Length: 162
Image 1 (tube, rainbow, N blue to C red):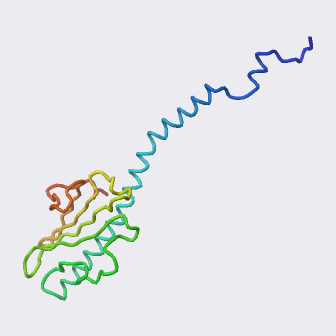
Image 2 (image 1 turned 90 degrees about the vertical axis):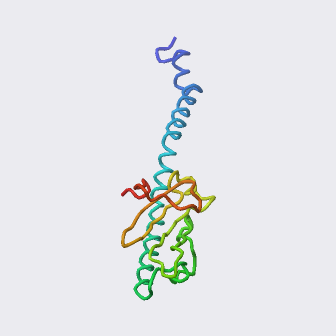
Image 3 (image 1 turned 135 degrees about the horizontal axis):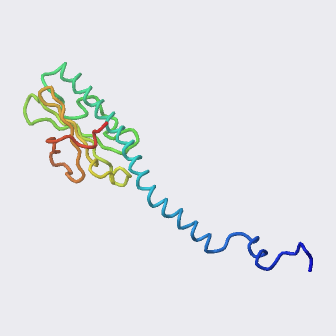
């Protein structure tokens, strides 16, 4: 026999990965993806909330400008000069304004509702966010399934955590 001839066992090892090793590697990648993907999507949704915050802040500024020229707040976005769209620029949220039912509104609520079919519609307790201005005080709320029911402003919501 030659001194440099590989044995049958060492020749098999030089061939590459075995099927078992490949399956173990795929399983590890799948487990990591299962753990990391939901966390990534939650971070993405949280970052998209800033678009709703910015849009609601724009409506708040328009309300204050409207009130400086009128006796109360505007009851519609159209009265504020927002006629082109009631959606945020990327289309993840729809905006609405609700005022108190009186002739001179001294309270208003701006809502941003996640558009169905977008990833924001799965945003847990922040599918609908709202800001209420009443008596010079701002209150913040968020809810997952309240639809068009009044938002709960009784406690600070995690949607607004900075």
